[in-house]
View 1 (cartoon, one colour):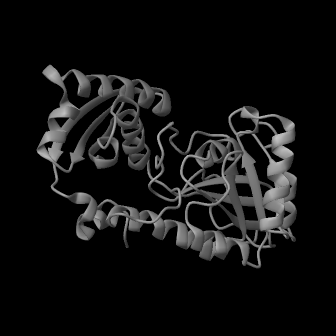
View 2: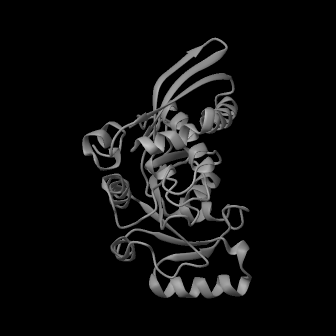
Length: 301
């Protein structure tokens, strides 16, 4: 933790952790709140696999936001690791932002909802995607969730269109505890650059492949080397079966070339420098259920 000597009396700091069902817009909200594209966004559910922190700083306060995987009943070890991130986020939260949408009646994991409803810290219930329905529906949903968690602050938002998001900040800051910063004031995230490289490649996999393929892939950055005018990056796409490898590569390598081209363009914008991206595909049999491999990929301690 940074030294408190240079921070004013009454400085506030806290962990503001975002939780909710898959595909309700948590990552879009996270990026809005942080003001940077920290979390990858895709229309497919379960896009977020890790807990990702985004840090916002002002002279008198620091907010450490956390995006978390969508809650679910785990079907395999990878999803158990994802739910561990959610559990940890509930344990260390100073404020919880529970994101739902205008269509959801119940969180996808009842035990997690029950825990949130009974926590003695501030809880915001944000009803996302109100741009898809009228004001009358939004108000009905607000009444519904207020009955579910009476002490929560409930608000309709559209993370995509930035409706009602900016007005949240004052309410969040007001509820932060007094504390010195948890991170240096010039930090934006707790994740290294290699993590964001792997996430950008994985987002292109989510975009270009269907059915089980995106959920069977893990991206491992084997080399990340910066030279004066270029980044040299080598990454492996791990798949669970040989048949998946052939699909990822595509006929004549057309699919992996498409993924590589799109990822390279986004990486060049992200890194503000030319990128040479070398992608390989490797079969890592049943990696989603192998805890030792999942530890290496960062899903378990």
